[in-house]
Length: 144
Image (cartoon, rainbow, N blue to C red):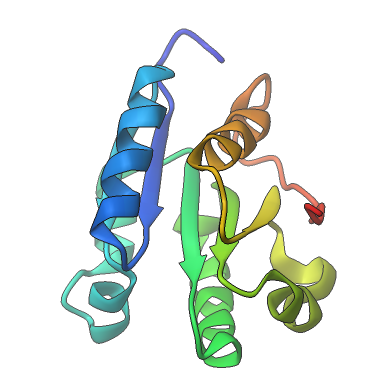
């Protein structure tokens, strides 16, 4: 990583997952910010303003059921300029279903299925950030 600290934004519905992942990523030297997916979807959190203010280098975003609707919502967010410049790690409870919906078009570093070890997510973020500069795009790599 460069001399400046990379910022990682975590968006998930589980407060416990967010808090544990924050600890792991902070221990690795990242600055971590977070928001709830439901707050983004409801408009309670202005996602574009949040992203513009925080300027994360990477996003960890959870795709929950209903997968098709939540995948389409994330795809819409992914098309915004503030997200295009971020490395993305997706998490989901049903990886095979998301793989079938998303295919190669995720633009994600990785899709990590649950149950997962939070270290796997942190490792995926690190792979996306280590030695890479923004706004380089990544191609989807499925994780078995």
